[in-house]
Length: 125
View (spheres, rainbow, N blue to C red):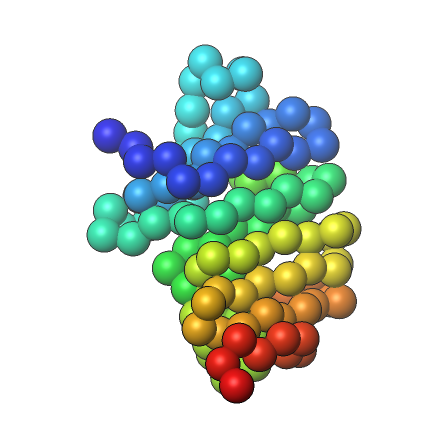
């Protein structure tokens, strides 16, 4: 089965679901699905965020990015600076500006679509 953890809808209406085993995509209103970002069933996609045709996915502490509504993906890696794992937060206001983080890794901001990150809030004093 597919354990659902996240959902996002692109500008054209493609539906993406993230969970254990990766990301699936439907362009038929959910009647049929295609695995577009397969990962080991020991791992999961915990968050998805779609802005226009760009989709971001949190996959086991790293960030994946699609610029074609989830058809193909590039691995941005364990982003913020120093390779810190992110897993609890992923949101973008447009295709370039967004936040990522988790309870242990603080809050990070990007202004270049996830290529670089700067710390904005430290959870641990």
